[in-house]
Amino acid sequence: MTDTILQRCEQKGLRMTSQRKIIAQVLEDAADHPDVEELYNRASKIDLTISIATVYRTVKLFDEAGILDKLEFGDGRARYEDAERGHHDHLIDINSGRVIEFMDSDIEKLQEKIAQKLGYKLMGHKLELYGIPLKKS
Amino acid sequence: MTDTILQRCEQKGLRMTSQRKIIAQVLEDAADHPDVEELYNRASKIDLTISIATVYRTVKLFDEAGILDKLEFGDGRARYEDAERGHHDHLIDINSGRVIEFMDSDIEKLQEKIAQKLGYKLMGHKLELYGIPLKKS
DNA sequence: ATAACTGCAAACCGTTTGCAATAAG
DNA sequence: CTTATTGCAAACGGTTTGCAGTTAT
Image (cartoon, rainbow over all chains, first blue to last red; front, side, top):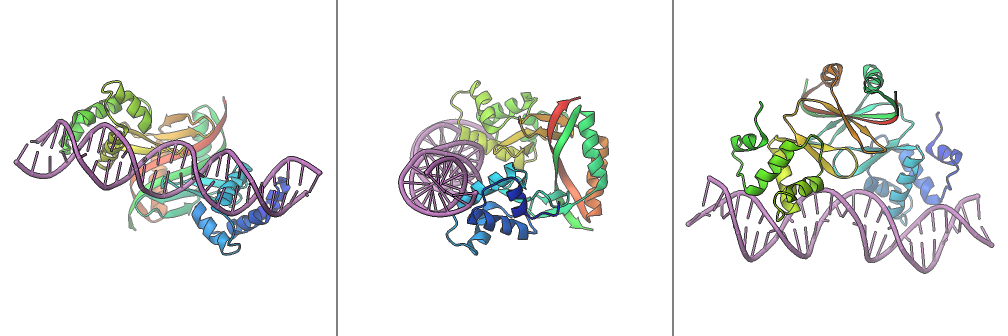
C-alpha cells in the first residue's frame, strides 16, 4: 500500500494525461489539505496552461476512484488528501479554519461500536470534530 | 432551559418581526434538520409573501445568537436545528444523505479527552460521523 | 482511428447584498 | 420618529458543463 498516487491511478486503468500526472504529483507532495484553487496554483507552477476546470474534473475522478478523500470543513470549499495517508481524523478550529490531524485508537473502536449499536455496518468512515480551542494548555 | 425559540429571541433582545416569529415557529415545530429552502417552503405556508432572503438573514442571526446550530453535512446546503435540543451527534449516510441522530456517553467523554490530549480546551463541539451503512443488521 | 480528455466561457446553485419601501420600538 | 428589517433583483463564489479542438491508447 506504499504505491504512489500515479501508480494507483494506472492500476485502476485511468487514462493518465500530462495534466493528471501533474495533479497527482502535486497531491503526492502535499502534506496539508489543499482546496482546488490551491491545487490549481501549485499545478500552474509546473504547467501554466492547465485550467481550473481540469483540476475540478481530476479531483472528482480521483475521489470517485477512491484515490483521494474529499474533506468538507464547512468553509464552502472542498479540500482533498491522499486516501492512503495513514488513517486519522481532523480537529477544525471554527474560528481560524486551522485543521489539526489526530489519531486516537479509542475513536477507531468507538466508530465501529456506534455504528453497530445503531444497527449499521460502517464501510468507510470519516470523523470530524469541530471545536473552539480557547487556549493552548 | 425549556424556553421556546421565540422566548430566547426576546431574551436576547432581538427585534421580533412577524417574519421572524414565523421562522422561529417553523424551527420550533421541526423534528428534522431542514435546509433554508425547506424552511422557506414551510414558512410560506403560513405567510406566502415571505422571501427566501429573509429566511437566510434570520437563520444567520439566530445562529450567531446561539439559538440555532448550523449543520454542514457536505451536500452543499446548510441545515439548522434548535441549539437547545438535547446534545446529540449525527451519522450521515453519504449515499442517501439520510441523517441519523445518536447520543453516546462515551463519545462525550472522548471529545473532551481528545481535545485535552491535543492541548486544547474544547468550548463548543459538534461531531460528525460520515459512514456508508451497507446493511441494517 | 476513436473515444476520452482539455481549455474556454457560460451556466449553475446556494448564499449574500444594495437599495428603496415598510414596520418595530 | 428613527432605525432596523423587508422584498426584490442583482451579485457573489465555488463548482459544473456544453462545445470544439486535442491527445492517449
